[in-house]
Length: 189
Image (cartoon, rainbow, N blue to C red; front, side, top):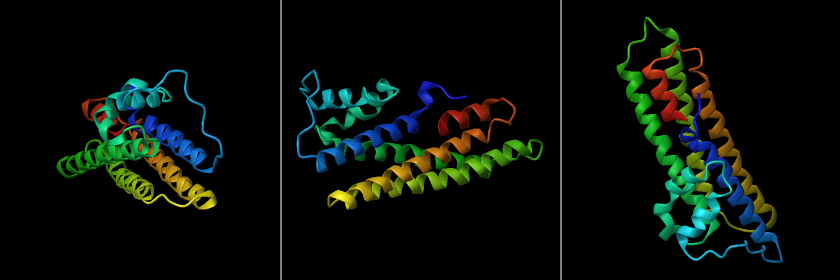
């Protein structure tokens, strides 16, 4: 049911995990990380280069390139922006699912109604988990074990958010194919 275009949160999870790990390495390492083979000459190039580590580099770059002046060439800012973009998308999906849940009558199709209500419920949790990740990223500080713990929190919440996204789309597997199923699946994934 998933397409490369619809794997937005999956690529963000791995993207954020990579950049958080990179920040941790930069913080606790005594020697600088080796430079890449090609020099990064602009903020947009930094985002493009960073997005090459993801499964869908074009989606990554297109989602983040408009933030180049904010990110500059800072991995932590890039991870923060990526989480923020994910949160904005998740809020949009929750509003969409809320409207669908209120407006729809699924008496003849109980599976569809159950899947929709379940999806709405897990996406509210999804938003909370991404918000928790964003708040933790905004307050990252310290070093060593303290920083590792904070980064672990972000990774855990992003992983839980990914699980909730999958729970939503998995709930529609037994729903008959139709425009509602496709629309919810495309927006949720």
